Each structure stands twice: as structure tokens, then as C-alpha cells.
Image 1 (cartoon, rainbow, N blue to C red):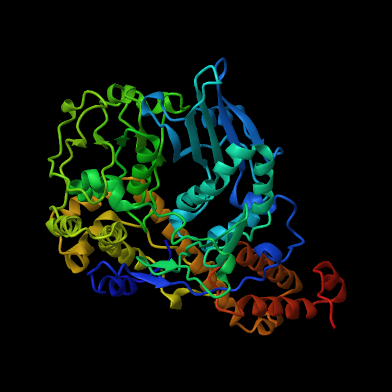
Image 2 (image 1 turned 30 degrees about the vertical axis):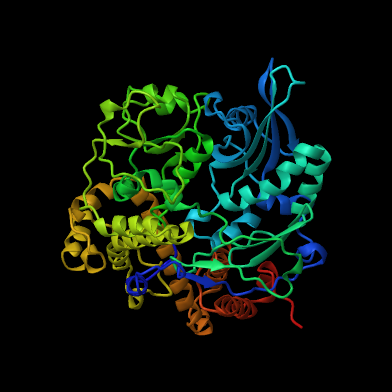
Length: 603
């Protein structure tokens, strides 16, 4: 989450709340011209090797087939040099096929997420980090997991013993760009099923000529004779706006313009249970153990992703599995009854889970997703003992008592939209705006208190280590809520204090605070470095011995390296100024020491 002052966030929340059919709070993206060569790729970077560009987007592409004797098996991995452990291959095999009870005839798309094998390091680590720096927290690369984006085809084929052709094309990536990769699969998969591996090779070669996934830039991506145009959001974008990629006169060759790379349709996903959206928001915010029981992997994965995104711009810091099976390597860990269910959101389709996860505290049952235009009857939260099988009625099964009073206005607004046949995109925008304002109202007091832990700038001395942040004290924070709590920005009543106390004990707070603390430490280092650059170092050198001066040079070089490595938020020109200081101090030393300290070449 980007650093934002509470005033700026409050200003955002002060904007008009009405979202009509036409106005969906979308602002156009600023067109950023890339230096591109033929086919839309950036000019060749001499530091990038073959397949480096591909690796910036994908780890590999897998083809998973069904063998009567062996079961699911990975038939092809492309590029062929891609590495997957046996455990990872097994996970991909089982997660790439719907459970047999799902009855997915035809083409089905869904996604899953699985743990990366330990001990593997990417040779592109530093290269990829630069893209993560400007990405929103929810769109950063997943360090410990891979996403699998699946295009599964099942059609009748009498020539096969089983009577069906069953195969999945799977994109494996660290990037959570679900809408983008699903769109990409719609282009690649049908061609692959018709033309086989040569088509896969051509697609991978196209991807290896793409520009790298820079947040904030409008990217033109040719693949399989089609051109996609996308923009990856940045952490500097105004929350609640979607930076639409606008068509231009030069877009004659562009076939697909994607409005979002990652946002699922919240209203469609929550439509079966939208009377309980506020309670679901609380459960996700507090990192409660949640299971989504759905009839298909597509509905399961979309609903889990919708839950995870409903607390945006906060990052959901616990584990989540959009599609989870009994063959998953974490199955025993997550279904044991010997300890409390872990902080995780699981999406399942197998009826076996209705019994296995019956002890879980919160279960969301999704029926076949109705069209967003149909009316949903209001349902009470059901008791867990009523959930016996996966065939139970749709609804939320939980004994949870929400901290906040129910917001009837959002329910009425969405119901009115259904009655008036408001477009699904507008309903989605209303719901996304509601969740954003609710989350920001909750987070503003925390942002304000954490900002007060920062030392005053006047206490930063260039010749002492940067001062430490003051510790986060829960009771001190709770006292600030009386005058500067969420009541300033939210009309909702209820036990906000109880909600905060519970939140401060959950993984989402821990992840948020560690991220904010890291940002503030970087800011302190930056202020300290800027203070050093404002000093007259020649005067200081004259007052110290050669040994102390050499020590100063080494420390300044360390500072310079740290600033470049960590991309400290410095004022423009600070690093140039620091390098000039280092050069001038080195020149004040005897020739032999200048040589040791790598005297810069003079023109």
C-alpha cells in the first residue's frame, strides 16, 4: 500500500458516492509511449537473454492430459528448459482438472494457487524486483506460490476408450493477473487443441518478444496474430479508479483492449450471498478460516479471488486457494481436527469436503451462479449443523456475530439495480466502491497513528544513525479512536473498537504493519541521506584524520549502494550530489589512498 497521508485518503472519500449506470468512477490512462520495435516489442536490451522476457510474465506453460492407466499427467512443459519439481508437477496435475462431479462439458476456465518448492531462486530476481516496486501490494509477485491459469476442454470422442477427450492448457506464473491470463488463454488454447505443439512454440516465441510488465505503462502485446493492449496498475494510482486503456488512431491492429488485468466481477461472484457482503468483508479482514463450496472450479476460484480482493487496498496476507482438492499436498494440514482451522480461504467442489470441513467456523455455499439480473431472496446466516452435504442450499453457514451493524443502504442500492436491470459493470463498480470506502474508513485511523510514530525531521542528524521509529502500542492507538476513529468517514455504527482489537491480532495487520514499517524506515534512511548531502564535507574532512576520512568514504559508498539497491524515496539529484561528495573527499586524500578508493577518472 503506497504511503498516503490521512488527509489525502479523506479527500478521496469526500467525493460523490453516487454511481450511476454510466458513471463507474473510471478515469482514462495517460498514454505512455514505449520505445518499440517491429511487432510491439521494446528495443533489445543487451542485458536480457532469450526467454528472459517470457520469464518476466510466465514461469512455463503445461499441457495436462488424462491417461486411463496413469491418470492425470503433464505431457508437455514449454519452454523445455523450464524447471518444476516432482511435487509441483503433481500439484499441477491434480489442480488442472475439475472434480469428476463438476460435470464440466465443453471449455472451462479457472485458476489455482500452489506452493513453490523450497530452495529455488530465480536468476532474474533483481530484474523482476524493479517491476514489483511500483505495483500495488495486491499485484506484487507471489514469493512463495505459483498461480495456475487453466483452460480445460472436455468433449465426447468415441475413438477414445474413456469416451471423452480431456485436456488442460495451464499457464504457470507468479503474477496474479487473473483476467489478463484468462484472456490470453482464450487466444492460445483453442489454437493449441487444433494444431498442437507447433502452435505452443509460436505463442511462447511471441511472448518472449513482449515488453516487460512495467506498472503504469500501456503495453501492446502481440500473440498468435492478435494484439492485446493492457495497462498494469501502479501503487500511485488513485484508489477506486480504473485506468482505462483508451483506443488511439494507431490501434488498427489492436484486437483486444483489457479494462483490467486482475479484477474479477464482484457483483456476479457475491450475487448468491450479497445480503451478507458486509459480514464476509469482516471475516476476510480478520483472516478467519473460510471455505467456499461451489459446483465448479470456475465459480470456486472466482469467489475466492473476489473475497481476497474485497479488502483492497489492504493486502490479504494469509494463504488462499482458489481451487483446492483432496490430492493437494496441504490437504492433511488444512483439514486436521486436532487443531483450530488455519487462517486460509479455500475454494472446493468435491462433496467429500462437506464432511471433511464440517468443523470449519465459516462456510459459504455457492449454488449455480444465477444471472446477475435475477432477484435473490434474502437469507439468514445458517447454523453450521444444517450443512450436511454439498447439496445443501446456497448461503452462509456460520455462528459469527458481526462487529458492525448491517448497512441496509448498499443492499437496497444493489437490489434497486437488479430491479432496474442496471448493467452488471455498474453494479460491480458500486460494490467495489462500497468495499473500498469501508476498508479506507477502517484503515485511516491506523495510517494516522502509524504516521505519528515517525521521528521529527529536526531530530535527524547527519552524523548519527537515523533515529528509530516509536513502537506501536495498542492501547495508545485505541485511545486515538475516540476523536479520530472511523466515525469521521463512515456512517456505520457498531463495535469498531472490538473489530480493531481482533484485527490487531490477525495476519493481515501483521503484514500491513511490516510493510508500512519498511516504507517508513526507507523514508528515514532517505531523510538521513539528504541531511548528509546538505553538509559541507570538506570542512568535516579537515577536522579529522586520514583514517577517519577513509572510513567516511566507505560509509558514504555503502549509503550510495543501499540507496540504489533499495530505491530509497529521495529528492531528485540526491544520488548525484552524494557521488560528487564522495569524489571530492577522495580527491582530498593522498594519491596512494585515492588509488585504493578507486579515484574516479577525470575528463
